[in-house]
Image (cartoon, rainbow over the protein chains, first blue to last red):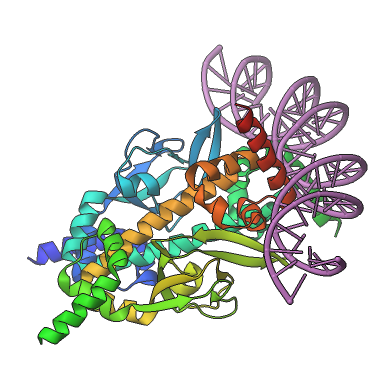
Length: 208
Length: 208
DNA sequence: CGCCGAGTTGAACTGAATCAAGAAACGTGG
DNA sequence: CCACGTTTCTTGATTCAGTTCAACTCGGCG
């Protein structure tokens, strides 16, 4: 038996970042932590690989421990990036994961990454056995809802230049880790315009 | 005792639309229904009154049984409508309700309306006593998350004309119940442009 | 009856897209 | 380590969707 507890301990050590992150949302009992540790599976993926591809059902909810990725859709033959994901975030194609309908979006690795995944079925089972896990997920949904609402207002109200300024203020790391073309589609502007905005920014800020 | 059950029955009859709606998301046990019936409070408000005003904390989650309303924010002295709410929808200022921080948005009645409200505290208490109520809310969050995601993609990708076309296809009732100026800010275009788009639509569709 | 807010229509203007061509940066194989 | 093609980014010229400003119309209401 000592052996079993030791293995649980080891597993939870490897998932430390995930559990630390969860703690910020809602503190779980040891039993619930153990149940989660038994159901999350590690996944290591190389740059440019896909976590989710359009047409296929997204079965997993992921926690991104290390790396970066993006969600994009195809519109008129072009790739439109809808979001970027970085360390310590839950990742999935929400529409597909929730409804279990084929995904319209693709999730692609921008860097080699380490993820922890759990299937919808496993999670649903855990909801039945551990009320607090369902509470945790309810709270996570709340946070992500608010985030999305912010993005929506931002997209609706701001001009291209303002959206870029907002991005370098709120998430400057994106600029170093993501090619311009993907950022421009995320901001809803053409690559040329973003290039111009950026050079204008550099000139005016360098002058000061 | 017979009297008590009779009163519960009466209460649930008055809230029939709410319970029917909930049923679509997740079927509740009689005990949970009863608990909800005891905590939701009816509210009848006249046209142009406010359900939530900016600066104040939004304490309630509402179910709109009858009527119409809109959420808007002030930007550069202008009112920007972010969403419309109609019958059989849950309504709140999500950011304020979830975080219990002062609201940035106003919720105004577009018509005289009948609502059922429950406070955040009451709901949180019910989460502790009835797992299934927390599940219901988790499922509701999922649905509303997907809806918001759709609105986001729509705002980001479509042109003004396409957004209008999408609106009359998906929610034609809005046009009859809401003044043009509010619809235009919701679509993220100027009233003049919407007027032009609309007249163009009428001309081309009347010609066919 | 005249006022007032909401909607329409016109003309000028502008932010951003598109088209097109070059310049850098990047990775791959010799 | 360099030469190569490929992709990514920049810069310029033109075009276009949508804004802004301004004047006008219409329906409701004191």
